[in-house]
Image (tube, one colour):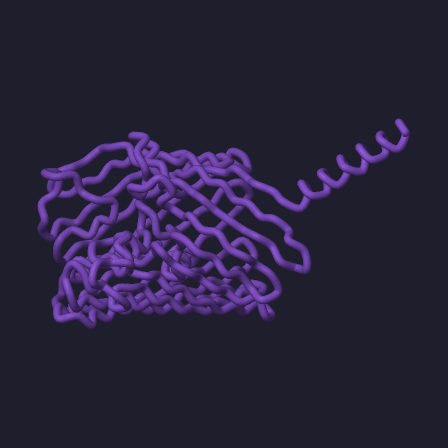
Length: 353
């Protein structure tokens, strides 16, 4: 009898271990801060958060449900490392979604990145962040900021790069080719289906080639009616050994009564040798209404102290033919809202875990 009880207990423990092996939760994060000096008609010196990558802490999990089906979730909180506040003004402001994946692809629901986030970030030598010649320079078209966020986006989340109240589907890879779509429900008073974000995209990744095409229709019927912007973004990268060439184009079609259109493009590259990484990029922002263009050219250097820790620096020149498009934000009283050119120097450290 005792032998049977011992055997039964052993089988129970083994089953529990097998069940636990089918699911996993990963805690991860990034701590990134940099010193920044910028000079125009006046100068500003400050400490900022999230240069190479936005500072964050997150939880990512998956469970094997059998038959090729799995449950997935991600909740991720942005952190302003310089003052300890939330990076996106919400507890889980970077991402918060749950879904199912399998041979059919993946379906996820929650607050999620749109395709514009990846198209503007993955194909940029300076990504879409807050330093250097990044794609965050592109925008400011009638107050609309497709990359870094603005008011009157369809789901009330300050721009179409992250979409609240969204459902997303992505196909499995067919020889490196994927397509997907996202719908963000507006859930605004009186908005009905006129307040929403619609997103369609396609991406091909195979060998040295990576390319993506993104289309977003962003409507906000409340509080101000008749706001609709369509953004088309294309990005591509080609890797040749230690060298990589990246570039992209973004077009904003303002279909509201404001009709403030514009476009922008970028071209850059990076070169890795050992623990060193050199990068350079040119970005142009071109409103259609006038000649108030912005150009940015930046060079950067990164040294990997380990697989998790890196130090980095950059030097960038912003040439402004109109109001300053320095993408990191300007403290009140530091720069005039004129045509001042801006020179920026950055040095920082990033640790990931």
